[in-house]
Image (cartoon, rainbow, N blue to C red; front, side, top):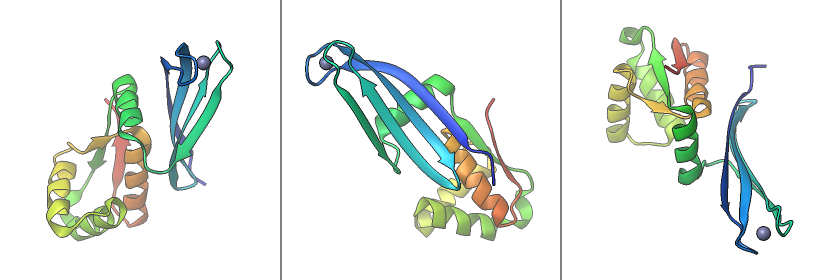
Length: 139
Ligand SMILES: [Zn+2]
């Protein structure tokens, strides 16, 4: 069982019920090979509490995580032998076509493909499982 990767960010937002500031906690995680996110909100003024979750990370939560923690980068240590495998895994995991995957492959090989740590670690694990020596790093 691989180590879970979890990142969270706290922020405040206006309460939809009373307009007071409520505290939110957003979490992105990679647990048991699955990416998921969840956001919990709690309003101290009116007591409203909500929780949302899902698998496809909402753009605003992704931006908050990237701003707070900085992006992680995908590194492939010996890319020369493994282009075909790399392209196959990237296409399957990102759900992209042959044209887009070439652009993404260029970013990966240049060490310029980045995202949240759970996202990048997810790809690195899929690549390692396919025999590609890949790691997620953060400066
Ligand atoms: Zn409220």
